Length: 135
Length: 271
Image (cartoon, rainbow over all chains, first blue to last red; front, side, top):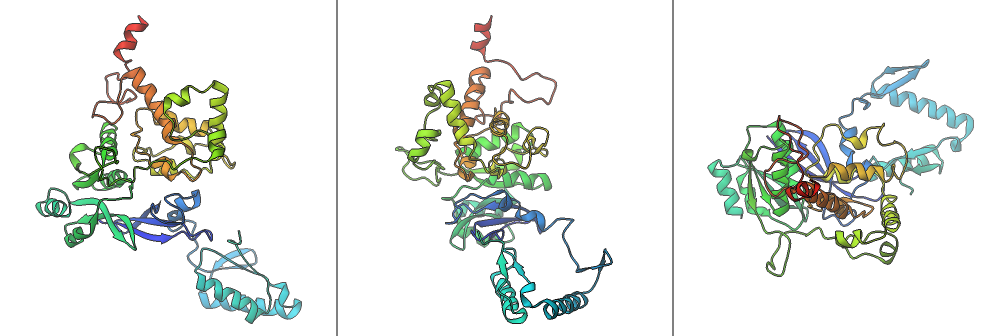
């Protein structure tokens, strides 16, 4: 029997509430608000309370899927990234860089968000960048 | 305290002990075990209060053979009584270690945060229910005023389910609050006042007045006051003190003996 409480920060929005992940027997079973955290002071919204659910969700995507003729087919990472790069290049060449927009997310790290905007500005050449936590 | 927990784990009196440990500068709940017994030197008793009895219930559901020790404030003791009454956590599986509770003039040192509601602002005093009022003060309000004040509080609800999630004595697998036929989905605030009243009714004979729900409420709804009133009715009607003993709740429906009996005085007055 093991029971662990892992302190973390909620990744849903930019507020940064302190959460505790409850791990029992190596399995994530719950999320709790951190009582002494200065941001949320022991309170959470419904998304924060259910942070653990998407990790164990059956619906979670585990492989890249490629939409070919209306059907989603499982492909490798190299194929998926290669295909996306080819299509992006064609679109930028045909319609210009401002035909592309990049939407980033609070569910990825700060560093990944930085890389995404860098990719938009330096590689694609557009300022069309937005984020779900632009509250 | 540390020595006692260490001794309990070494003697085999308990297999796991639920208490708090400083981690990243925060007192966080921690499960102390025999395998990592040196951690007991970092055990702290406060000041934060987490629902340790709820963790114990979850452990007991998975590992009925494990003996669980836990820090027990007065409200934890009441919760353990209620959980035993409702067959969720057998009393013989838990070993509470009493700790200091809420501060008072007689007991200056306290490990509890007391979970006391913060001072109320002007708008809340004018429109809502001040959480630090007595039940009698709320009862003294005129009917329409009292209703309007409670509705003001309820309409702030963001339906986070925090009150239910944190509650040590909320253990049902299927929750009425998530039943689409009882509570409409997709709107905020949720169906008021029914959302809060359903929960209040379910707290009758169960609420142990620990204050965790009110502490977890982002909208600062005075839930403790609401459930306090519900339990005051239970006390008046059935003479049942929730959590005070292992006596069966008047609402217990298991077994062949009826438990829903009115309080003696009331029975006489009805005749």
